[in-house]
Image (tube, rainbow, N blue to C red; front, side, top):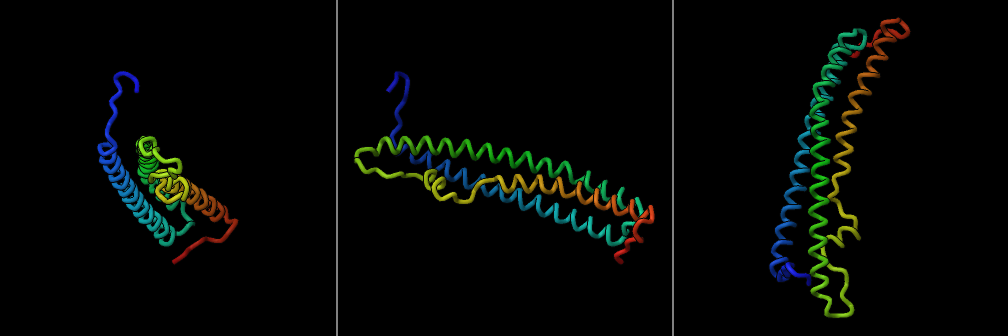
Amino acid sequence: MSEGTIQLSPFVRIEEYKAILADVANATTRRQTVTALYATLNTAFLGAFGYLILTLGLSSWLTIIVLGSLSFTILPLNLAWFVTMLGYRRGLRTRYAYLRSIEEEFRAYAATTEKQGQIGLIHQLQRNSLPGRSLPETLLAIYFVVIYAIAVIIASLLTWLVSNQVIPPIRFL
């Protein structure tokens, strides 16, 4: 052991380990709550999108202006969601790395027998690839950013086709 290094008892480290695990669980719950909130907001905005298309139709540029405005309204929220998900990903990676380092200490301390198997939650998560990763939620935020843009582009194209009498007026109600 190098000079200035403090060797903590495994019993002290286990309490720290348990506290970090609880923190990881709380962060994961918060991440899932944020995802549910933003998914609900996007569902409401997409519902409004559909309602406007149904009621205004696609024969007027007014519909496109309203849809574009709605898309620009939700864009900052979805970008904030994306940035939040990236923050959760970084934070959870850091916590997992710290847990991994504590588990390494446990393995070193318990290395009194020849057949010491792989122990620790992090090892089990890596081996079994259990859920808890935030990549799907991060991609969902990007999906919603893209889907609004695609919806406005398609609605604009259809409105242009109607206004140039390439296709008949589109009325849903």
